[in-house]
Length: 429
Ligand code: KG4
Ligand code: ZN
Image 1 (cartoon, protein in one colour):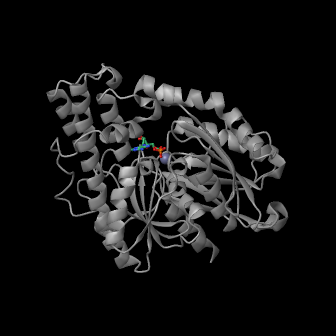
Image 2 (spheres, rainbow, N blue to C red):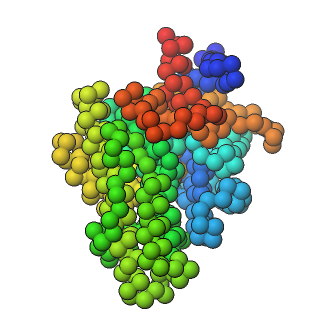
Image 3 (cartoon, rainbow, N blue to C red):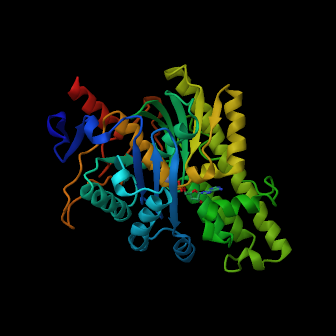
């Protein structure tokens, strides 16, 4: 890497010090920038995923090992269990990704891996694996932001998707509305003040006694098709807050109370429920889904107005993250977007839920801009302290969008991806 490499050390506060490494791409290391092949590894939550993607957008392989059985057994993600499950399968998942692509590590240009946000114990498994491969094959490594990856994968499937664009990122742990001004430059228009929509789907499914082996979201989506979405009156969250933030904790409570008042017993699986009981559960599922998604619609409508004031040239709203695989969510948001004369871009379900392709692709995007770390040492000690970022915002909050309802708990939050990249660019100029 030699002289083209330099380090920028930034002190953000007396308590916080980190290194952000910026390395220019030496062509002899990466070969032609038009023909890069990147392995992406994702272990931030409960899926162990790896994929290999070429810089022209070809997906050479994609492997996901999900912890569905564990999820069903514990009714949620238990970090220590999830870590153990990742450790059990990570080697095989990566090996399968290489074999399915008919490649070996020697054919790779770089390794990309999710370094945050997510569960530290889980992130660590992926980062350790990525650094092992990169170290033993002298490959550059790109640390990827999980939510940026959910947004950018839309650029792999929709080649016309240029910056600036908007994105609604909806998953089990996140509910984000962002304006993507450029690669690595994001404004956060809204986020959740408590739970994310995926968490509300998962809990509703658990309380309704649904089969959680494919996670709660798909189970609710399916059952909701049988129900009457107007049968149960749930109120839409945050009506009085004229911003773009979200809240799902109150809706969860409304659902729980509705279930209790109808004497639905989650111990009786839906498959054994009487037809009357089943239809009552379906009504709750449909009514919950209608209001949960209406909340998204209302916030998106306002966010589009805000975003167009900042960047009038915006043409697209990307909807991604696990919940974006839901057909009802897509159809409702399509109507909102059309009303505002924009276009909806929704990756296929396999690229909406956690996957390695989005990590490899985001790695490629940054690699092309020269943002990556040099190969780690071949024999890194087992107890090496990795740069993991469990709480890591994507961008700075839009000033109009600050919610009084939001807790200002900022302890142990990493500086945002956008601020790190901006700081490194200022150092260069
Ligand atoms: O993005 P993701 O795979 O993992 C996280 O980063 O959290 O999202 C997982 C979430 C889960 O809450 C799951 O129930 C939800 O996405 N999900 C769905 C659907 N498929 C997955 N929610 C609603 N409808 C679906 N079809
Ligand atoms: Zn995710």
